[in-house]
Length: 272
Picture 1 (cartoon, rainbow, N blue to C red):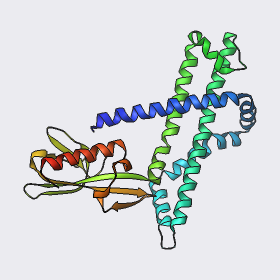
Picture 2: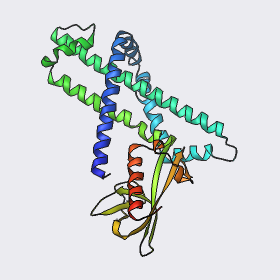
Picture 3: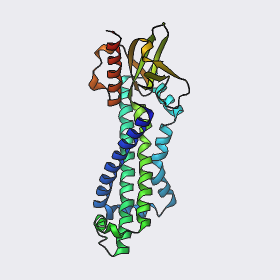
Picture 4: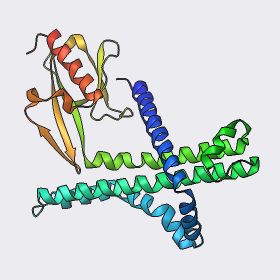
């Protein structure tokens, strides 16, 4: 899959996530609007409470996303005294924190959107008891209302995006490929950036499209292709040795496409 397609897939998937989560958050906070309004007014009456409410969870997730912090957690989770039970509790704790983070900022986002709708309803003389009913008057909305809603939604998108790094740290799978050319040259543990550029594989040491050290391997020069399947949990990468028993349903769509591409190439080169 090319870098352009990866980018569009990323934008498409996260747009769906933000729209779905945003609609749910607005609906949930709409039913709790009056109660949340009282609570938030109380919180924001004190600067210390307000700063804590707005930035505490974001600051924690920023710290947990730092490489040094993750390295420290990995060392603690896999030291000699560590047990599998400890790592399971750690993963559970991180997942619970992410859930609290998402609920916290989703409800805050929903309340802000409802507050904007309520203010617009006051300006238009609509029913402000139910902010969502103001949407029926959307054709008469002030441009500033729409602009503010879009800006808040973009900010909400970035707040959701901050969890991506931590989710990946908790656990993710990865596939690398080994290539042996007809002249005996070997490329081991390479990430395939693109499967077809001028009938060649574009590979690198990492999946980062901005990786400087890339190699273009012509398919006609390949004698053998194999793949390695890795799983990373809490920063520790483990290789699954028996790749022949790898089940396709264990992989995501991109990894499945990569494996199928490699298998087709193996058949082409009469490799069993």
